[in-house]
Amino acid sequence: DTAVSQTPKYLVTQMGNDKSIKCEQNLGHDTMYWYKQDSKKFLKIMFSYNNKELIINETVPNRFSPKSPDKAHLNLHINSLELGDSAVYFCASSHGTAIYTGELFFGEGSRLTVL
Amino acid sequence: TQLLEQSPQFLSIQEGENLTVYCNSSSVFSSLQWYRQEPGEGPVLLVTVVTGGEVKKLKRLTFQFGDARKDSSLHITAAQPGDTGLYLCAGASYSGAGSYQLTFGKGTKLSVIP
Picture (cartoon, rainbow over the protein chains, first blue to last red):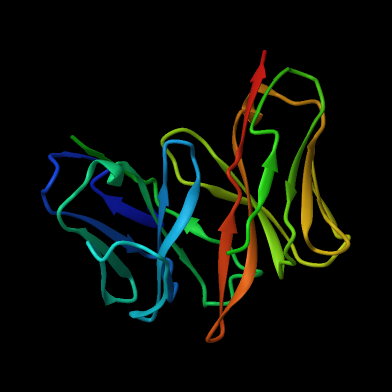
């Protein structure tokens, strides 16, 4: 069973379109995250949710809107896609918000290419 | 924003050689984690170090957390082709409201040539 699963794995779309990436975790964790990994492999946090509530919201354009229907799901919706949005997006989860000793479990990533 | 500098950025070595990857910051972290990422997959945790000066060993990998909790190193002994991958360090810091945030370094891409 996949612990953190995200779909789709690949997404190719035109500039200006709206797209969503879904994420689900079956680990029973209460905190979920979205990270963006650019072409240079730099992994940067975008959002963090704890029990469906937003707790971290880094400087991300408001075209990106996370939605957490329950603590096992955290979806990412992106409006008006731009070329610079091309990247690999990783969903992750952890037990609790005190991740200083915990572990992040990552999904396999969703590679978004904006043409 | 706390920054983590990793070095070297790229490393290509022969099988059997030893190597060290460094992770440095001017900020103090509550803990530091090391992840390994293979192509097409998400990062996977290797180890977490919490106490200043702590040393942890995972088979041929040795991890050390600096005394001041600002830096860390990963040493691999007798590298094997299976060690090839992207190694990421991540520092945990308190971000308020009872939560912590992980800041990742830019990674070290290791290639071990048979």
